[in-house]
Image 1: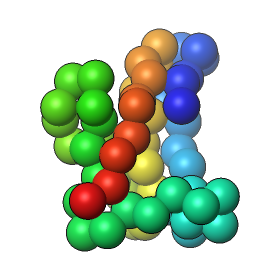
Image 2: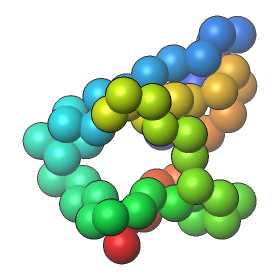
Image 3: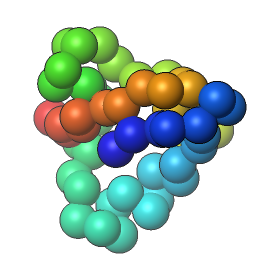
Length: 56
């Protein structure tokens, strides 16, 4: 997923699960190896960034 806007975007984690993404206990970005920022059950996508997500 990518954010092509100058402002952070938020994605409800429940919506990811309804699309078939199995998060497990942790989410990580396969590109950077980092854990994305989560806030109140939402994934925060910084401006002009992308995540290639994987759950474990």
